[in-house]
Amino acid sequence: MKALWLPESIGGNSLAILFVLVFLAQSFLCFHLDAWVHPQPFKNSQPHEAVVDKKVTSTLRAVAFLTGYKVLIGHLFWIQVIQYYGDSDNAADRFSKLYDYCSLASDLNPCFLPIYTYGAAALAFHLHRIDQAERLLQKGILSNPKEQSLQILLASILYEHSQQYEKLIPFLEAQIDQGDAPTVLIHILANTFQKLGRYQDAIALWKKRMRESTSDSQRIEAANYLQQLYRLQKQKP
Amino acid sequence: MRKILTVAGFTFRELVRSRMLYVWLISILALCGLASLLSMLSFGDSLKIFLDLGLVGMEMGGIIVLLLSLAVTYNTEMDQKAIFLQLAKPVTRSEYLLGRVLGFFMVVGLVVAGMGLAVAAFAFLFGGTVPAIFWSSAVFLILEMFLLCCLGLTYQMMGTSMVGSFLYTIFTIFLGHLIGEVEWLLSQDISSWIKTLLRIVEFFLPNLEAFNLKDRLYDPTLVLGWVQWRDIFIYALGYSFVVFLIGWINLEKREFK
Picture 1: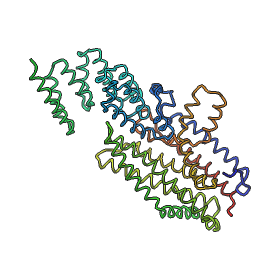
Picture 2: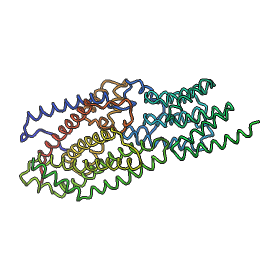
Picture 3: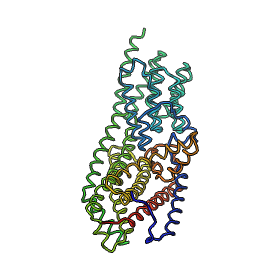
Picture 4: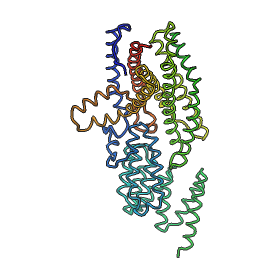
């Protein structure tokens, strides 16, 4: 690379002064821009950013931050998390790394809600690791303070865990009646009814789902659950 | 001005004839295909995933076209001495360089804007909607590409080989995205001389994370108002101007034999 000198032919000192002024201005702006534009987790001034769990190391995360393709790598990592959870070989240790992986995926893509909803639902309802589900949802709520679905899911998990069904059921019913409730809430409510032996309520819920849903896959899912519930109801002494 | 536009038009035609726009078409097909595949494989909102990956594709497509354009033009201009013909005409070196920057920007901007329209069209086709922030993000990407065009051509003027200018550009792109890491390191408890060194690095590197709205498409804490638009325009143009000056000075000093 050639040495950089100011040539006489293009203005000499005045150009040098202009150069320094513009450089200082852009440097000032560089810092000014940092105040609003830098993404998580490097600015911890905001409360939601202080939650980022850095104890988990990952080459993928490092690559994401170095290349600036956080969301792309975040989505790829999320697919890996799904594959990890879907692989029955990992059931031997009860999917011990699920929380860490969900946490990493949410570091890279903190506004992608399925990481929190599916991750927390799996941790709480399947693996019964309530503290990890709570931590993941708190992280999601702090990153997405306006997303009610995360708050609802957190409340549901805590009620379920403390077996306060008299509080859980009306709470979930109210949320589902508002419309546009996440599927996971309907599952939680239906399973709670089933657990308490209230098959009629569970059947009514899935029937309502079948009637109101616009998605074929959701209607098929509701029909499958209805079949199971009718079978269970018949077997009931 | 007419001379600058003539050089810009010539550069645009030269790059289009070098089949640069094929990269665009391949990028659209490959990246839209990849985005659709990933959105199908993943759990969750497939439209969000598609738009996120579409924006990544726009940036990648723009950078690939820029790097290939730099390689192609270094070969013709410097190695095959085509620059002699242009500088022999009544065109100053500054006019030549500015025309080159504009020509590059026209091609790269066309690629990024075209991919943006393609991604939006796909999203509409599949019954989705495109949030307003997507278009803001696309404009930020175009501004980033302008800065990178200036930077790449400056390296071309400073470098002594095609490989050199190619590598300087690609590493500056990586380092520009590293500003976030530098900021994080500065907030840590490290020795003062390292902090001073990092401050200097931060001053010199282009803050490419400032243009990175694509990672914050659904960030509820994002504030994007008049002040941010003003700052990002001034930053992009200011940094590009400084980089252009460095390139211009080097071109003036360069002896073609």
